[in-house]
Every structure is written in C-alpha cells, then in structure tokens.
Amino acid sequence: MPLPLRPLALALPLLALASTATAEGDSPLPMTYAMFEAGVPHIDMALCPEPLDGPDRFCRLTVANDQINVFVFTTEGDSPMVAFQSWSADLFAGLLD
Image 1 (cartoon, rainbow, N blue to C red):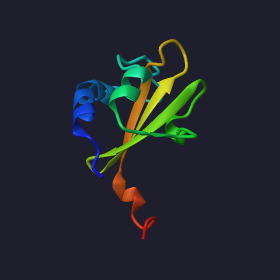
Image 2 (image 1 turned 180 degrees about the vertical axis):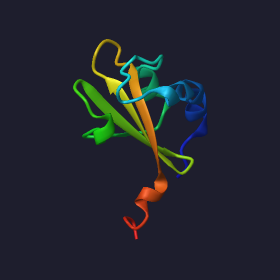
Image 3 (image 1 turned 90 degrees about the horizontal axis):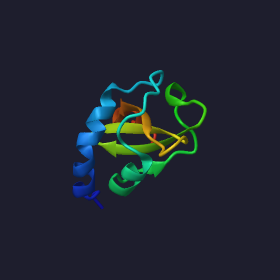
Image 4 (image 1 turned 60 degrees about the horizontal axis):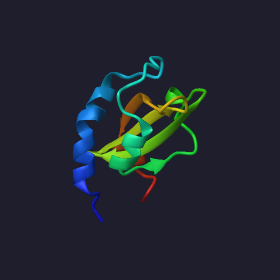
C-alpha cells in the first residue's frame, strides 16, 4: 500500500532544512519530534546508525525516492531534530532476494 503523500508533502519544506545538519553540528533545527511524528510515516529505530549516534538521541527511518533517510532527534526540551542523513536504497540489494 503506498504511503499517503499529503503528510509527507507538508513536511518536505521542513525536511529540506535538515539537509545541512550533520552528526557533529547538534544545533537544533526548527522541526520537533512532535511535528515529525504527526506528519511523516516512519519506523522507530532501536539504535541510531554509527555516524549519527550520540548521547540523548533517538532515530527514525523513512524510505522515499529510492533513499533511506534517518532523522535524529534529541531527548532534550521539545526534542528538536539535530541531524539527518540519507543513503541509497541500493544498500538493500541482495538482502531481500
């Protein structure tokens, strides 16, 4: 079943702001976890990928446009997003054969 496009389309302008975030930056971005949770279909990750992992962080995964996208939020305050990274979905090649 395809993902609903409307919530994702509403979140895209905010997600674009995340493109400059890095694992080292940790400067809060204007998207809180509450906003993300309400508008972006995602999978909760038990652990953050190594380049994004850190204390007081949690990660969420989306798959869109042949990209695996990981959003990183801090547990502090309103849980703002502090990092974002995408990888090619080609990483799944062979895993699902």
